[in-house]
Length: 75
Image (cartoon, rainbow, N blue to C red):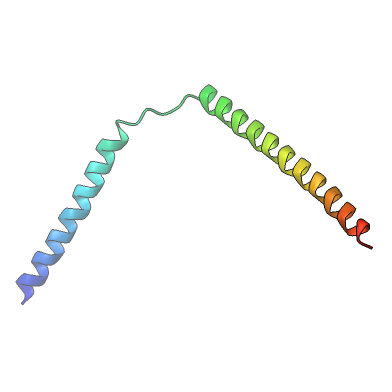
């Protein structure tokens, strides 16, 4: 009975070690961005968020005016 548990723990430990070994090997293949690329991509994301926010604000503004006009028309 003790051998079965030992084998289970040994197999589990081996699997964990293999996972981290493979993880390390895969992380060596990653091409990390330069600080300039990170800054450029961050600015692009911020600009896109700003543009989408303005479009949502404009749509909300126009919709509010339209709904107010409809409500006032039927009063």
